[in-house]
Length: 88
Image 1 (tube, rainbow, N blue to C red):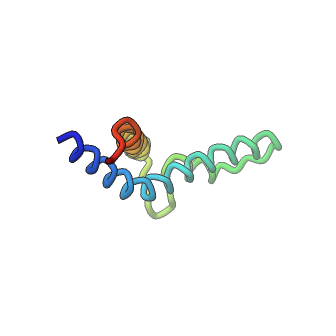
Image 2: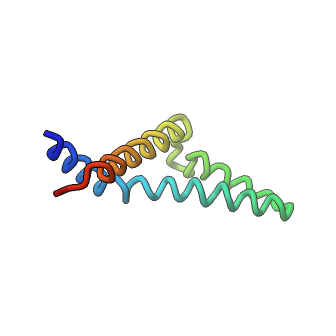
């Protein structure tokens, strides 16, 4: 049963990481870029909108933080399961 669980975690991890990477990279990138621009006294408020999940026509702000949190937890847990229970 343990081997089946590890195999399933590997499959979930492999499928989910590319999907999770994009919103996590967008959030990290826009937050960092906004901070750097603000230090140069450039207020790029539009970066904050993207950072918080407002993509213009597609506004995910109400649940974007929960989505990012869930993706982070799932990827972390599935990765840890692979690390601690290597496939034989």
